[in-house]
Length: 463
Image (tube, rainbow, N blue to C red; front, side, top):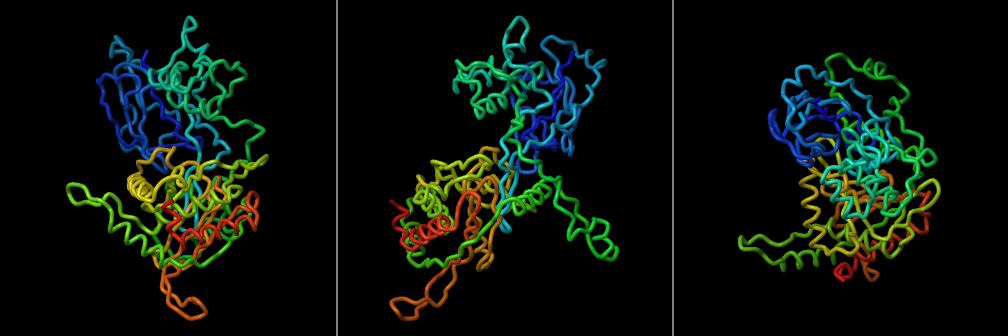
């Protein structure tokens, strides 16, 4: 009988998605691992791989269909040699309900521009089965070629990994979950297996509310009643806006923020920036290899500041502090009617030119909604820069699981005192928002002091 292809869960909290594009058509041959469709979530457009071989028999959900529930049948796949007449009697299976959201961070925000979806991608819990050693006839392990290759690379035992594909087949996302969980290493003993994506009960935090509390305690209808009919346009919330609203509310309600502000002189940094950009090598078309922005210096300085104060490079959990070895810095990027925070990994060890080019690529793909979850999840801190809009100073909202976020204002000429005399200098005001559960006041002040020292003596950023 035809095998149903289901709408996948691309994050633990995904309940619906938009089927943006089919990359195959009915009658096409499909191999395991082939990219067959593109699915839009609230943050990105992601590719979906086939987990079985066969022929695309029937496309059930057409391109452009929005709000398709997780686990709904989107197509039917004919097995090799199966007659197309089998489709005539094939009923679309009853749809499984979408998995309950896991208590994992999703999308946060910082001031007007800082947010990131930090939930790790997980397979659909409703399709998970027993460990793989039980999923094949005659004891054979069912796994896609891509999953087998990844398992071998990561040193994972397929027999200990639950499969979430059709008939219990192990697919790529199952390998990714097993890698994070660390429970399927070769030589490990199998224990009770939870469906992929399920959070341990002891570690689960209370699930956040489905949305922000009503404004001022008023219901939606009460709010609408305050305004005359026809005096406003009502724009329904899309998935991104709902997620941002929920995460901002959760962050402010559950994280004890405190704020530290300092003025930083930029004249030496601006001089060095001009010199480095002027010395940039060019390619055959005369295009410079890099063009540094002030924000590139800020990212590097924030990373090195946390490297100097390592106890502040931390994440809070209910039982411990996670003190990170590398400094992964999220950088807020505005996208149409929303925001996302791609992460510069190991920013403390990267050169300014690498950071600059990487950020340009991440920002471009963020605006095109082409980022992969691994590119906007995680991190220990973030930078939100509104200086280009003429904003002098603001305080950003921490994006869980980060321990801090730096809000950057514009650099402007101001009166400063140098050697006991008034002078004019280019000054930038920055505010560090800190999670008081993991970083205390003195520790946060040390970070900001280190940041100021690095920006005002920017040659240290080149070492």
